[in-house]
Length: 608
View (cartoon, rainbow, N blue to C red):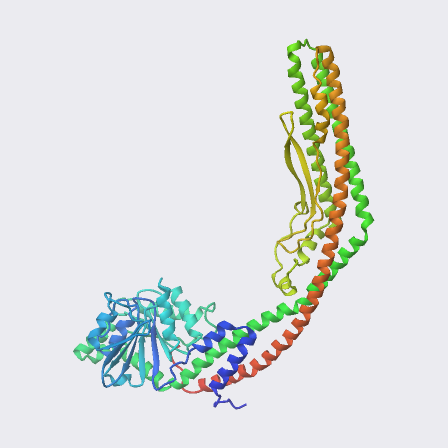
């Protein structure tokens, strides 16, 4: 097949820009508007990059034979140097202002004491070698100032080719390789330079190690990207000495002549390189779009499995709702067992109190001890009431948790239920996309009894619990069903009935024994009646709450299934649309690939 050498890049760019919003590739679209290949004029834009203090500016001065043209101290501006018969200097600022001058202003614009930083400085010099190319000096990469790195990237976006400068004083750093990886995605041609070779005797070893590191860094660079990487070793100091003395041998050893050869080669084919840069950017954009398409398709195609899971949960809840009698009978059985256990505990504690006070009455009791014994029996009975009340609340909480685990399937179905049902108001798409998080333990899913205190004329705070039995299945907020009615169940009313007995004070030691027996008997009967009433009302409240919550859960699941069905229909339509976009991307990708192959078949080989 013949390569489409006449591929219309403008039409290709327009086609991609129309498809990227369909894919949701906003970042890729932004790159399309500011991408590489921006020079496309009569000159090649050659951007010099590297870490601060690697000798970039000294190298440019040496290339131009002007050792003192640009200040070699670190600068916060990037500088464009082109050729013209009339030398000039223009400074561009962030607010849009532009000032003009001559070379005498450079120290003021680029030196450390500059009053105001210019973002970009354009210098025109009378050098015929710059007629077909523009050199860009950049602040540096890998430093701590992200603003300077952004300025360098802005310059890279205009580049026809890069000159990547490393110092012979150190091996290539991770920061340099990280920047190089980003730049290599945009720029086809990169010339590697090893600077300051006159200062370091082992520069040849550093050069070889740098080349091997770049070739072998498959984590950052695609295979084959830098297989033919070649470093041009240079010395700006030797080049300046050669220019001052007219020494051709020094000039050759400095490496500057070899670097000029590389730059002239680039300027002679800059139109092809600009097009290759554009195609490289297009390839990156298409790859991003394809990755987004693949991810969205995986999400959409997962919908049927989630639908099956939700249908299974719906059937489970429906079956549980129909089996009303089973869990109601289980509730009744558990309530009876708990009531019998608490009543047995009450009888045992009353018997213990009776034995204690029988033993007390065997002692020699004086009349002035009667008030103390009366106060003690009142305190003991208050503690008994608190103990029995706590036992009642503990049993009801256990019953509620046990019943919930049984209804939801005590073998782990509680976790399934919590994980598989969407929350109210959550769309099916959100449910499919956002469902995560571990389920809670069933014992933590039932809100238990809360208590409040009330005062009596026994100078003691007596307990009034409020039963708030609430079925609340929750796992990371994905289902919260109705909690039903809240039943207020007062416990302390028994003490109102014992007030009269407490006010009937014993008149002597003989009547004290009878008074104690009557108090214990009355407390036993009243507390027993009270706990019967509490268990009975708790049973009613739990029945109502659980039935209401289960019905609500079933309705929520049914509505979610309907919503999911609609989401699946939309997903099917989205898949059709995404597949259509994919079929449109494929020929663009192939056309770009073939055009790139045709360009690379020409005389474009070289360093990097």
